[in-house]
Length: 368
Image (tube, rainbow, N blue to C red):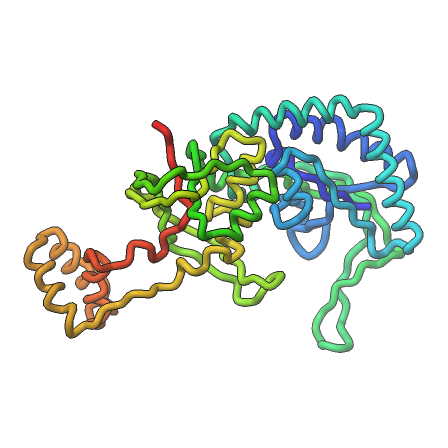
């Protein structure tokens, strides 16, 4: 039996320590006592487990990752494919029994840690939304497996991996379970979402997010993100073309909001969910899942024969702009040989350029 647990770094300090120091040891010991030994989920660094295992991080797209957004400890069990069906069922049954036994014996610990975590998250201001494996910190874990070999493939003519079930082994293998913080954000006091984004509002509401509403049309100075770069997977995943490697720049702007727009305070039990969904750089944000794709479409353009005279005026009246333009021409040959790109340089800096292009429509507001 393999167990996919949440990573303690992804949980509150209270739940993280309870999981690693008490709950997991209880489950592993119980499974060993039942005759169905358990090990961490098999996520090898290379082709075979001997290359080392890494402790898996749980993205919110999975139930294990989704649960952590609400201070809930979750597990996924995976019975081994080499085991007979009956043994896989019984191993799963024993795990469920062990989880129930822990809940019965130490439920008060779970309840206390959950309550403390809720209060912790309500006041939390710093959230890590991207991690990367720390390959410099290596531990060892005992692993029971079969010797691997590469034999000739009769179909492809290449080599195929084969585990020799006549050659079992028990050995210590590398174990990577530490992650570095790659990207952290500080939450604003409020997020503001225009009411037009009703599909986003619906999902926030279903997940228990508390809202306030703008009482009358008003102009507010807020932080706005502009999407500066992103990649998109070329094939669909669950019907979506996911965005990743999202980069943003932040600007302060005065934005017109309207009566009924949504204000989301960040003093809620659901703060982790709010941040992971509304920060566009988070791996499973609403932006990543295409809810805001319409902002990626540019709708306004210029006619070169009309705009060139205005571009000349900009060049004549702004010395800093002239220097920036000339430096761009010197450093970028493709730019220097493309007249449309050169006019675009001016258009994008003109008052006619649409400010909403690539502007992420979830705004950040601080009360001070």
